[in-house]
Amino acid sequence: MAGPAAEGTICIAPVTAEMKKQDKSDPRRERPRLTFVFSVQIDDADPIVVPEKKGVAVRSLDAKRKHLVRIRDGTKVIESFHFTFASRGGRSLCLSYGPFYETWDLSPPGRRPWCKCK
Image (cartoon, rainbow, N blue to C red; front, side, top):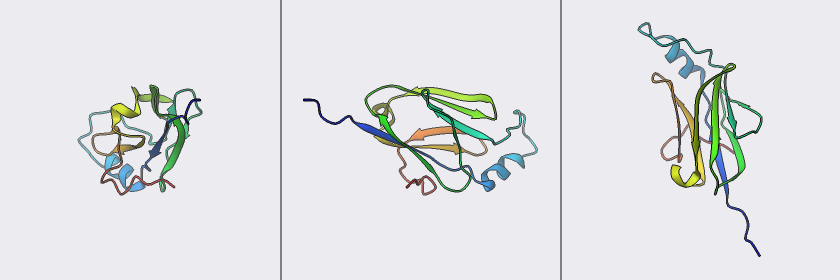
């Protein structure tokens, strides 16, 4: 008899108004402007709008298989990557946006107080 499937969770951290303001206010920007209408799609599931105030948990992901994450700004895919929970360091991960560098990170929550999901 097989045991219960290993499940993983991703907390999608909010992209706050303060973070958006920080990125929009840099006059030296040479990169294209973002609309900050972010959404995250994991595998073939429906996209999830990235919140502005509270994190959103994506639960019951198979922790033993490879997943595909696509991050959109509006309708344009701005980042995509494959991952496994093992390669990222645990079955509970945080997907967060880094203002200024305009990058996304998927790793264990660690010392990120802004990455909390119920």
